[in-house]
Image (cartoon, rainbow, N blue to C red; front, side, top):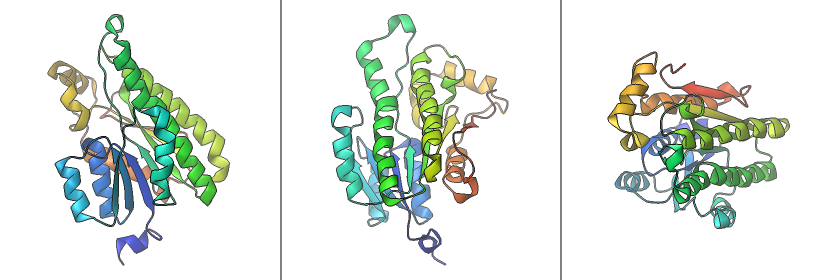
Length: 249
């Protein structure tokens, strides 16, 4: 049986930040499983171009700058109208501004909060309205960070952005559970792809040393956890933080 038939009329997954890293891996996974993917990112990479060529009718991409929060809801409404119904939303896009508190630069801090916290809340608002209008028992997964749970030099600010999203996800799960809508977060350690390029070797080795498995996180482990949370196998899991960090305890 074709995978798209197994997925009950080709469900649509909406993913932010699909041009590289985990977002690109998630896009590849859901396309290979027969889902239609609606993805947004600020830029289009060669890898994303390749996927668009391989899945011309299944992958819909739109350029979107999530830092422009004042116009985000209006732009999202137009984008989502093109696919009508959303089944799954994966909040993946994020940036890292790393510095000690006494050296904080407010413009960089404001941009990180806009992309990591305010934008996902606005997107979730639009997505939930889509779920409710179609009576969809939708699924939301926010990507969080171990920085929301452990202290690291220079990472207090990204930790704050992600801790806010974990609380938001939990309360979203509480408010909309009666409609069959689920919301969870996946709390990642440092991936072997994506933000690793913005972290120095000292911090990378430090994260490996405190992990029970003494390793970084491979992308497939993160994809597998997210795939589980967006499947019917997890239909009683909501408001949870699922840690995928090689045992940073």
